[in-house]
Amino acid sequence: MKYISTRGDRTPRGFSEILLEGLAPDGGLYLPTHYPTVDSATLARWRGLPYAELAFEILSLYIDDVPAADLKRLVSSTYTEQVYGTKEITPLKQLEDGLYLEALSNGPTLAFKDMAMQLLGALFEYELGRRGQTLNILGATSGDTGSAAEYAMRGKRGVKVFMLSPHGRMSPFQQAQMFSLQDPNIHNLAVEGVFDDCQDIVKAVSNDLEFKRRWKIGTVNSINWARLLAQVVYYFAGYFQATKTNDERVSFAVPSGNFGNICAGHVARMMGLPIRRLVLATNENNVLDEFFRTGTYRVRGGAETYETSSPSMDISKASNFERFVFDLLGRDAARTRQLFHDEIGAKGSFTLAPAEFARIADYGFVSGSSTHADRLATIRDTAQRCGVVVDTHTADGLKVAREHREAGTPMIVLETALPAKFSATIVEALGREPDRPAALVGIEQLPKRFKVMPVDVQAVKDYIANNG
Image (cartoon, rainbow, N blue to C red; front, side, top):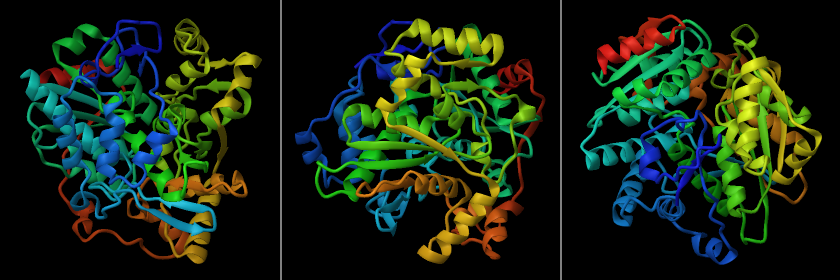
């Protein structure tokens, strides 16, 4: 299996080569040259496999330059009951008839990002050891990616992490998870802007090929294909738990800001997983919902990016979105580059041609958005009727999922975090603090280590050069 760029660089690269990179040299995102298709016989063989074995089967279709025995060992040591608390790893919970919650937040940082990041940490350490190299990981987080990456990389040989986050825009719990880490290979940079500013800095550094190569810059954001690939697995796992035969179809509802989580669902659907609909849910920052309703993708600036009670989705520039549009356009790299480089660069937006927009229906996407009032109502309703407390982002997914339910088609909502990470809104909705694991009680009071930075690419480069 080889990988190419969404913007036209056709140089075929192996998985191990793109694992340690972020953007392609031409500024595009890596995708496989094709999606392996899974037939009914393969689905039948995979049904009932333990999660780690299922992950190995799926990853093996995309990774052929890591010996199978090594890949199997890495996957088996990542997806364990000890780390995730259940042998199913991503157990399904029925909320009501035909409506399910897939638990993705039982890892070390209580967010779905652990599902991919724990594997990414193992892959990085393995590949760097194989090459005798080191890596400086540069990432941006709106709340959960950062802690998941740092917990996955802390203590890893040959790896340093430089994580950018929007100063003062994460929940106290999210800040504490990251800033309380004292590991010398972890560097937290709090940027005086919004998440999109952090993401722009990461892309600017990644696009400086000389600096990137000199300082061996890699990324753990969802622009990294390996992370998105790991997320494909739980779509298959959820499908098998919600169905009895491979003749059935299901829909998935996914809270979405950066389009990485739901892009993994797109990949699973392209592989042949019987997905009826991919239901995209946004918060008040509804850039993606607007696109799927109108065909116009309009990036917002920091002043137009709302600070909400589902802060991990306070994103107005979806860095993974280009992968889907590349497929939507029939993998026309020139047209993709025109939209994402030329038109967004010139005017901050693009609008698909009517024929291009019409193709979206073929990919199963529908969308909706949720407000703070919707969030509170959904949290209350789910607690009262189902006896389950959900976090604010999962509430956004549930609200939009209910708008798109179809009789006879199971709807699986992807849980994105545990409610303990957003206690202020849970208290507002339910009048009580959410439960949290004993090991994380009082985390907000731990000493914190971070550096406040301006929105300045050069300042971040200088910090990496002095500490990398």
